[in-house]
Image (cartoon, rainbow, N blue to C red; front, top):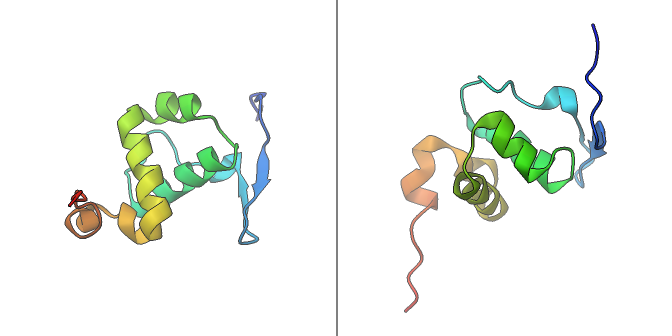
Amino acid sequence: MFVKKSQGPRVVALPDGRILTVADLPAPTARWVASRKEVVVLAVQHGLIGRDEAMRRYGLSEEELDSWIATASRHGRRGLKATAVQKYRQPTSKT
């Protein structure tokens, strides 16, 4: 098996002590569940892959990736669940 040469790091250490590697990234055709969304968000936040690479690889819009990052920052993995949309992604009122 040949490994494609990449520009960035292959391994990053997360603040909680976990290690995230390129091998941990979900397949581009994988069904989106909260845990896979979280891995993509962590990979982007910690420089394992770039934003543009993540959007290209997974067919995400900039708005979708930004919403995943914001939701994960506010609510963690629970907020990334599709069933939690109404609970965690309510528009904020400015009153």
